[in-house]
Image 1 (cartoon, helix red, strand yellow):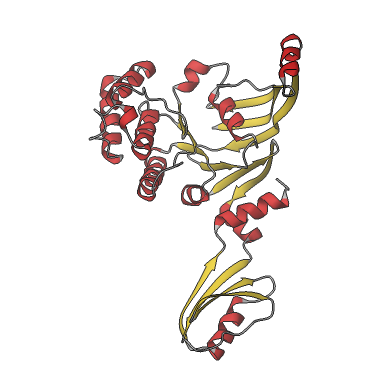
Image 2 (cartoon, helix red, strand yellow):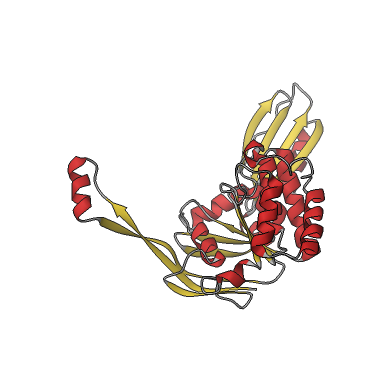
Length: 325
């Protein structure tokens, strides 16, 4: 579905010193500095995949998404989506894609949500019967019935994001770009949005490219991640492989009878959480978790033992550090 080969894009950003003199000088001769957003970016995405496209701020994520959406033209390289070059065949391309930007709206601010939906129907030339079925289904799944007559400016952030998702799917796109779709949402809204995206992928086979800093979104929705840093693709693989490679730390939390003294274990970091509770951070490359639990069982009267793997955020941070980004 998506074939990206050796994409590169450089921006020329105006630069000047502060002060009145520098301002007048810039009027005569503007100085610019070249900022390389992406360089030789290559990857393929199969139909029906859900891919997390992650990286720190300024890594090149948004530039790549804008090129794949047909908004930007790269300096070099090729991008083929559904057999088309996005920036050369924009009219045909946009009929097959949906885009949701968490910090930007495609809905009209002062009119009811339904009016925005109807206008998007006309823009995409969606047949009336197909539009009615799709709109009814989206309204039911995303619980929009009470929001359709409300002006967009009166919606909460969570309500607006649900409407944005519906708006991007009214024309039944084959490919959906999601840029920070759960930014600022409360826990209930986040769960609802994630569940909807999973159902959309499972039932309609929609391909999803997810860009986010929320690693819980990545873990809940994707099986594959693309890590970009300093304009390059640094990692392309599954979360399972990432865990095999980096997830060597386990956290053992122990509740024991008060008045006892928890043992200090060699090679294990210990932190007390209060009377009768302690946490051990175990590097499984050095010490076996089973040995730690056996030692604790022998020396303490245990009430409860919890063993947790590293959060996915810590794995991503380790990946960042390894690549020095």
